[in-house]
Image (tube, rainbow, N blue to C red; front, side, top):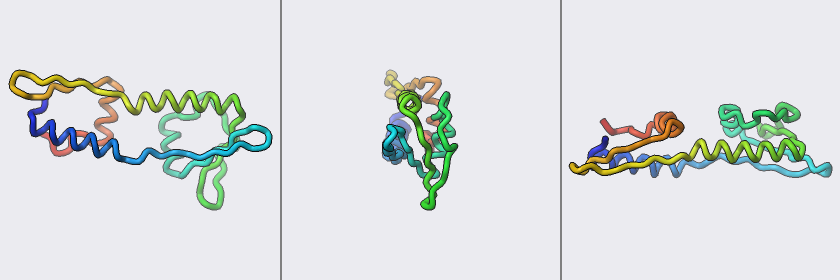
Length: 129
C-alpha cells in the first residue's frame, strides 16, 4: 500500500526504469545462410544470465573479436529457436502490475511473481518507506 506521495515517487522510478536503454545485438547472414551474431560484453553477459541460448549450441562458443565483441554463428534452425527464446525473455522482463485506490486515497499495488524480483533488482521502491 502506497500513499499518494509514495505513489508519485514510485511512478517516477518506473519512468526512469523504462528509459534504461535495452541492449541489443547485430547480426549478418553469411553465404551459407548462417546467422553471425555480434554482442557487446554487457549484452553477452545479460544473455547468459537469462539463458538466452537454452537448447542451442552456438559455434564457436563464443569467439571474441579485436573490438571485444562476442561473436557466435547460428544455423537457420538455431536462429529460429533463438528468436523464439528472445520473445519469451521479453515477456518475462516486461510483465505488468495492477493497482487500485482505496477509500483513503492509498494505492494498493499487485505484482506477478515474475515482476516482483525485477522490481527489487531495479530498486523500484527507492525513497519509499
